[in-house]
Figure 1 (cartoon, protein in one colour):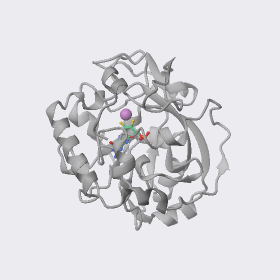
Figure 2: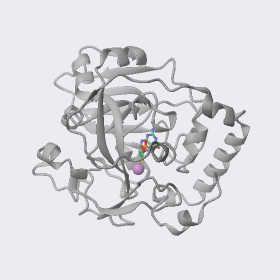
Figure 3: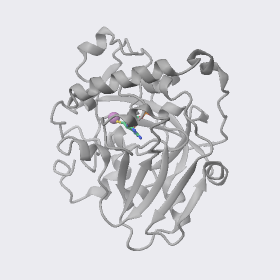
Figure 4: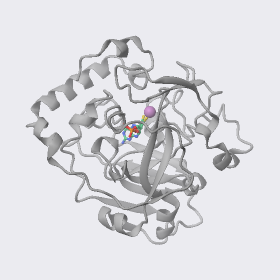
Length: 320
Ligand SMILES: Nc1nc2c(c(=O)[nH]1)N[C@H]1C(S)=C(S)[C@@H](COP(=O)(O)O)O[C@H]1N2
Ligand SMILES: [Mo]
């Protein structure tokens, strides 16, 4: 896992999230490697659990672009709680416990409530939505998510008139998540949306992909998916959702404010300080050794007709 294959070394875009971390990154990698070696019978675990099949309807707005193969979606992950290596979470998250699991919804709401994940699954009609997924590192995928609109979920707790933003928090459990023992990021991972963004019909809470429960490395049991924004906004393994009146400080902004803004809308006209955002490498099943194929990046990841009006009058170069 820790041995870099030649194309990874050659490519400047594989690990840019962590480039600034310099030697801290190496310490993290060593810790993750040690944790992996300590795990018993990884091989047998790979086949042990039958994934939970989900019931869902098909959302009519899905893209018809070629879907990224399951194997790439589950072996090319950013999930720093487990590893900063793209293929690390697939192994290190094998034994991650996603039951029992609750999501606490609190803050500026009339009806705060802690939801059990199985009640969430029963109470929210699921849809399959095939979305483009674009990482700030200039790679992209097409993923058949299974989930439901975040707006429907938030309406159940009745946000009050003071609520202006939504803050999401990932589980903090360093015993299970080896990366949380390192200072690679400030834990727990936090993300935020403006309330109108959260209420946009495209924003979903995903509980599955390819018709089955989310693989752990993709953010089981429940994660955010905001398809017009860079991938890091789509926070994984959520335990808390808080309605607030001030703009939340999201984890990537906290670690590198000049690089990862609050808005993080996919924008080919606003370069990342260290690389261009004009194009992206679409992962197409060629796997790690392949480079995918390069395509132009679209404003708002191609979802502009549904989201651009939320930003009218805003300078999207300044508000990156
Ligand atoms: N909790 C948590 N959520 C996270 C991350 C992370 O490290 N921790 N990485 C983000 C980044 S940078 C990306 S690109 C997407 C990747 O999602 P995927 O691995 O399911 O494709 O997850 C995002 N959500
Ligand atoms: Mo990302």
